[in-house]
Length: 360
Image (cartoon, rainbow, N blue to C red):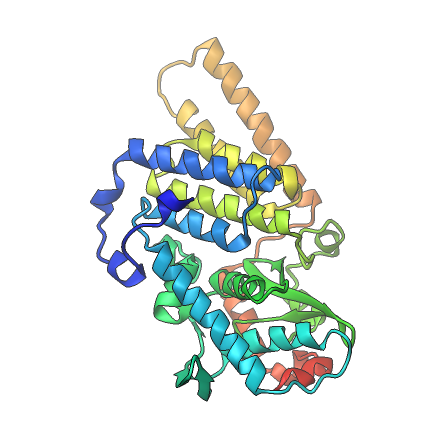
C-alpha cells in the first residue's frame, strides 16, 4: 500500500487534463492492481479499513498522483477535532453506550455545523460545516465530485462522499458507523440503547424517520424485504460499494473500452452483497453496451457472433428481471432533489424526536 502514497492533493488535481488519462496500458495496470487488493480485502485475505479502500479507489482514478499522506493527515486532524469537541461538550445522554453515542454526536456536529472557538492541540480553532454541492451531484460530468478527496479539499460534497467521510471518522475514533442505501442515496444507520435503530442524514443535518426515506414512493416494500434499501450494511458490503466505485471510475477513464473489467468488479461485489442493485444495474448496462457493439455491424453475423449475442441477450434479460423482482424502481433526478429539499424545509415533519438529545 505504501506505493500509492504519492504527490498532489485535490486542489492541484483540478488542473489535470483528460489527455493525461489516455495511457490505457497504465490505467489498466493500476486498476487491475486496485481490484486485486480490494478483492483480497473483501475475501478476508488482507486487512483493509474502509478508509483505505476508499482512498485506493480515488488514488487509482488519479493514476496514483494523489497525496494520500496529506489526505490522511487531514482525516487525522478532523478526527482530532471530533475528539476535542467531544471532550469539551457533555452529551445529554446517561446510558451505558454514552461514550459511543457521544462520538457519533461529535462527528455529526463537525460535519454539519459551525464550531466556534474550540481548543485543539493547544490552540483555538474555528471549523465550518461541510455543505451539499448541488452542481453535478451524481458525478455524471465530473466523477471526482463523488470523492471524499473532493469533499475534504473543498468542504462541499454529496450523499456519497458525506456518509463515506462520516464512516471513516467513526472508525478513526474507534467506533462504527453503518452505511445504508436508498434510491440514488447513501445515509448512516446507528443503534443506541435509548433510541434503537435510527437514521443519520448528512445532506440535511437531521435524523429522519424511516417514513421519510420511504415517502418518495420509489422504495417498494419488496426492496426493503430483500435488503436492497434501508439495510445497515456490514463491513464487507461497504467494501463492495468501493468495488463498484472502482468500476465506475474505470468506465469513465477508459470510455467503457474494457467491459470485462467492469463486469468482474460487479461479480465480485455481488458475491458479498448479492442484492446490491447498483452492481446489478451496472453489470446489465455493461453487457448491453457489449451487445450493441457486437450487433451494430451492417454485415451478416457469423454463427459464433450470433451465439455470443444470444447469450448476452439472455444475460441482460435475467439481470433486468432480477432487478425488478428485487423491488427496484428508478427514481427520477428531479424527484430525488425534491425528496432531499423536502427534508430541509419540513424537518419537524420527518425528524426523529428521540434523537433530540444529540445536541451538545
